Figure (cartoon, rainbow, N blue to C red):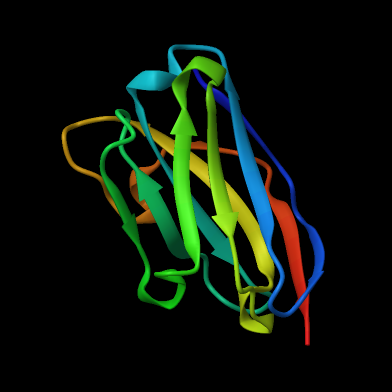
Length: 125
């Protein structure tokens, strides 16, 4: 089984940047599609971005397109989320999640069976 650990969260002013990392251990991570999700207080967990196991296919929720970039380095067993032009509404706990690739990527959280513990991102206005 793959285990995931997120890092890189913190407090940043609006307009600033952060890079989140999702480090994997255990089984071969390169076979797993990986997504980022986030959950703000009082809200449901929502999809942010996903990258396929090859690193060649990505998808983003509309609110982060043009600001966030997901990437991966399978040699380092790590997936990244570069977040630029951050807004207060990006404040949330960010989770990475993985599922064995089936040929297409998904934005539905219930389809992911491996989750990290989350990292807090706070954007001040």
